[in-house]
Length: 164
Image 1 (tube, rainbow, N blue to C red):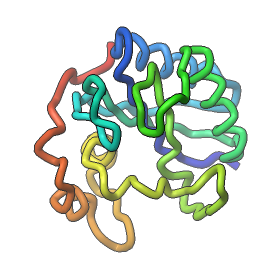
Image 2: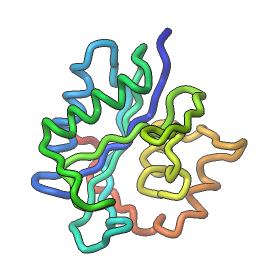
Image 3: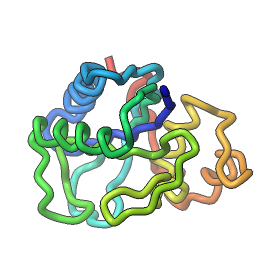
């Protein structure tokens, strides 16, 4: 059975836009995944560990019959391929791929939480997500409700309308 999932991508090391484009291409090459929609690309300030460069962030919508665990494994392999090093929590990275949602699944495991636990607090995730689906709702509330309650909403700056 095919499901829809939203995936956040971010990069703040090296050629950030090329890193994101390479990650999207790699996701699209995975068997049983179709990338069906892309958000705009935004430049954002780092969260948590702030002594690092600005990020480029975006969201993609995929259709897949892979399990969330298979997605996680594939996405971690893409991060490794693009030379991501996990040295500092919330630290600089060549690429980050996070599963935001996987249909209506709710999953809480030490290695994977769906929906993403920080998603509704981060404008750099919500604004690109709204690009793809302006009518998406969480907990019965419209996405704009959450965006308007994000303290970082004014720091999310349009960088490019498409990653190409």
